[in-house]
Length: 194
Image (cartoon, rainbow, N blue to C red; front, side, top):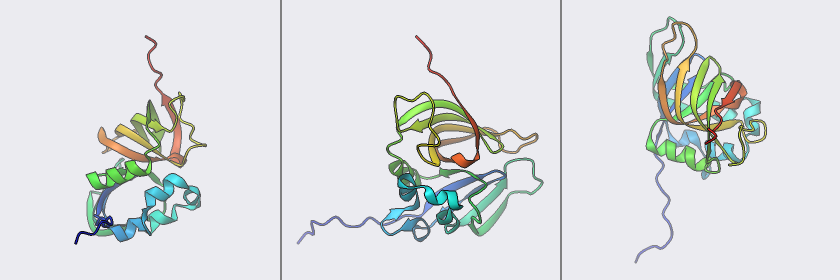
C-alpha cells in the first residue's frame, strides 16, 4: 500500500545573485539550468573545480530569468530588467550569492566541509568584502586558496565597491561563493590573545 522507496524531491527554481566586477545580476535559475544528472553545478564544483580554470563552462550554460541588472560602480547605466540573462564568461564573476532558502541550502550542502570560520577582509575585483571565510581546516590561520578550491564560501559578508561614486555600498550577504581567481588579497583578522 505504501511505497517505502524515497520519492524524488521536486526541484525548485533558485534565486541567485551574481556579483561581477561591474554589475549585480539578480534573477531566478530553473532546475534544468543548474542540474546535471542528480547533482547541481555547485556539488560538482565542490568536488572538482578544474573546469573553472577553462572559463566556467557550466555557468555560461545557466540562464537567469526575471532578471534585474544594476551597475555597482560608477557606470552611467540605470538599473534594467530583462526576461532572461546568460553569463557569457566566468572571467568577471566575483561571487555567487544565494538569494533564497533553497539555493542557500544547496550551496551550503555542496560546501559542507567548509565549516571553520576565519574573520577576514577580502579584496576582489573593485570590492572589499568583510566577513568570515569558511575553511576546511580548523588549524589554519589563513585560507589556503591554491590548495582548497577556486570557489570559497564566506558568511556574514558586507560588500562595498571601492570605486569613487560607486552605487554599491554596504550590501549584506548571509552566505556567498567567492571566485578565487579575482582575489587581490586576503587579510585574516587574527583572533585576540586573551
